Image 1 (cartoon, one colour):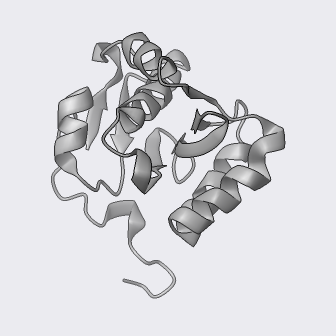
Image 2 (spheres, rainbow, N blue to C red; image 1 turned 180 degrees about the vertical axis):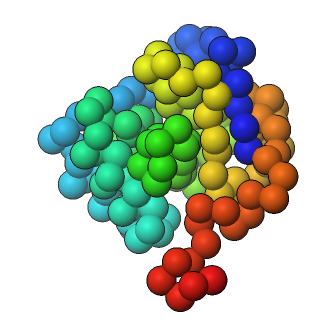
Image 3 (cartoon, rainbow, N blue to C red; image 1 turned 120 degrees about the vertical axis):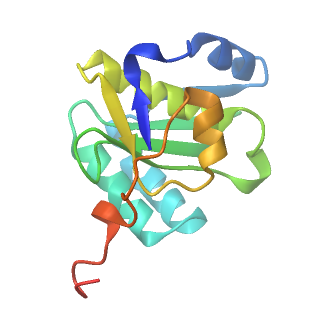
Length: 155
């Protein structure tokens, strides 16, 4: 999917609403790498953990995290698979539907806009309706599996 970064909704209302519930959205810090990557591996997939690890190698780190009362509840990365790509993103099952994913998405996309991108690509989209609703993302025709095809098995 494609997102216009010059036409994003503000992220501050999401951040403030979550803060009232002791949920903090912020960029990850270098010393949190092992904990975050292990959490992603445990809650999601090995490939997402590997992409998250790449995000920690970027400068600035291109991973945002969500914590609730100091406990990790979500993550989102950008520029981990390809330049100008958003993803992966995941929220702990118990915390879904509370606006955490929207705030993580907006945090990453605003960061991408601040480094000069006009558009962002959301690769490997799960629920397209979520991205359409939150950031008015539009499909990119013919892009599946796109960059995510299995190059090792030539698929």
